[in-house]
Image 1: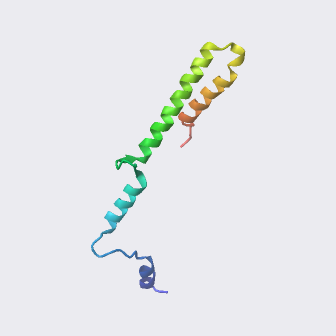
Image 2: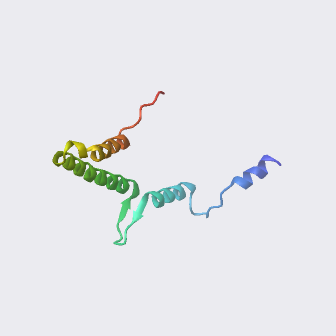
Image 3: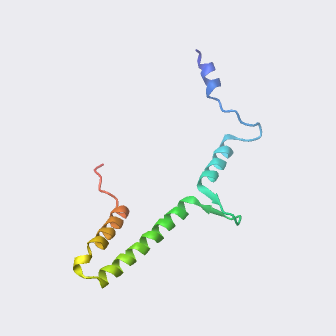
Length: 96
């Protein structure tokens, strides 16, 4: 098989008036932005980050409240939840 045949197989068919850069840009926009039912567009990455942050902050406040109001013998569950949330957000050390 010659190199010309390989080039033909690898070539992507695109319409004549659309360039490859605009196709990749449209694909990036489609993958990273969500359209809501109201018609506004929302960045998928930002929305997931802020939802995770909001839920974890609620859990942290709840655990701190329970640790403050409970006896010392019942605090194991809430302390482990706090350390789990801390372990999720703190990156593990790596040797480069």
